[in-house]
Image (cartoon, rainbow, N blue to C red):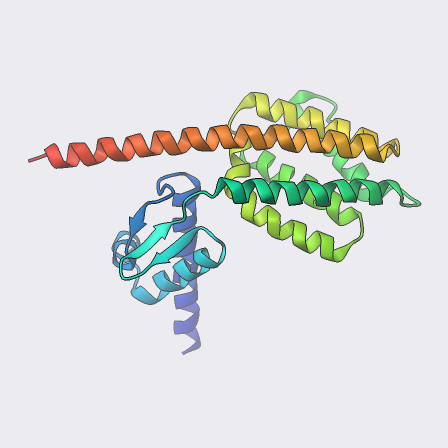
Amino acid sequence: MATNTKRKESMADRVYEALKDDIFEFRLIPGDKFSEGDVGTRLNASRTPVREALYRLQREGFVEVLFRSGWQVKPFDFQQVEELYDLRITLERAAMHKICQLQEMPQTVRTLTAIWNPDHPSERAVGSTVRALDESFHCDLVGAAGNREMTRIHREITDRLRIIRRLDFTRDDRIDATYREHAEILEAIRAGHAVDAADRLTRHIRISQKAVREITMEKIREAAEAHQSWSRNSQESP
């Protein structure tokens, strides 16, 4: 019995990861509709783990169930994204002030400085590692402020924004800018200049926000055109 339960959980996890990857890589684009049967056939999974995976994605805001017509990748709500960015900035600005008021500079700041101000450009991270480090940079700074509720809420916002924030590191110029801007923010923190640190952080996030919105729209447009092309070719095939 325990073995069967573990197997189902493992299959549900596999389906969840596969679908999430499809959404993140725009193989499934906002507005795409599908059924549990479609997913099960494609991933060779039974109905139960497919449903468990979909409910998990629904709770995280990636998909929504349609009455009597299956599932849909949730359309992007750019107003909601703007509001989440506003809340994120409010929390991170507050963290800057709290850190600068501490009696002793947290070890977190020294650790982040070593990461984002390397001795040589060759020591910089690349690809998915940069995305993970960037997320940690912001989460670790909020955590260093010492407010657990602030840290928890900020983590929830980070999770919800991850699908678009990851696109900020698909271009070399954005990676270069991230290293430079993070180093400047940390320098202001170490100097105890809370307002300067908060202002630099705000500019950094707003620039990133603008970039990921543009890239998101471009990715959706490219994926939609690819979908239409595939559909036309399928209809024209004998």
